[in-house]
Image (tube, rainbow, N blue to C red):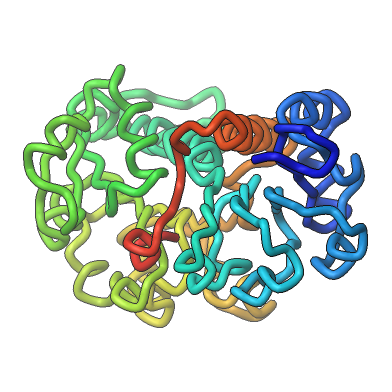
Length: 340
């Protein structure tokens, strides 16, 4: 793409909040991006009009957490815009899908953000199947009288355990890859994945009811869509094994929380909830005080050093765009309905 001044490099600008920019883009990352693009500025912009006011013909917008809404009207201010490269996960809070129909390529770092979520989930799976919480509590209580013979050893261990994964999303697929070294049976529910494709991921394709009933741990990894809202309700939770663990790192609205509270009330199952509806929960919500509920504040995704992985993914996509190569994580109009 030729630019004013005779340069063949595309022109790029950062469009995101200052805290997001500071987290994502260290000087070395900016330097790397500057080798494939002409940067309007080494600092961030927070609105499109400020970028347009520079008079530069911008080809690439690099977005992140805290970016403003982008619809087709952005092309009236940035008519050469050819790529929105999102250095974070979900695009739906900032992208009007009509923009995709206007020839703008859109890509996100959702696959990179999936890895820490999968790691978070795996850590709970391994810990839960080993029953470490129960053993630690028993040891603290019994101290010098602790007796291994009191443990239900037949129910303990990851070898031969069954884990159900709801959705072969970016997180679901990353989790399946992480579980490959462990001799755990993996079940997968995803209506868009064939039995053969599931086997290729190391899982057995099953229906949702079968997955809920057969799994020692259920990991919810589905995107929030109209058809997935409240997909986990009374029937699904009632089908779970006694002593099973339910993990939600997806979105709170995929689970009917009234049904969840009832299912957890008797202590028959346990839940790890990194996301809830609403978020955060009201201070008097019963989930706060349930001993069989582990609440974390939406921290399964990228934090600290993990954010760098998303940045590098985003920069690599911009580099591909600058070289005229196919984007790895492009999201087209046909993908939008199933995107997170």
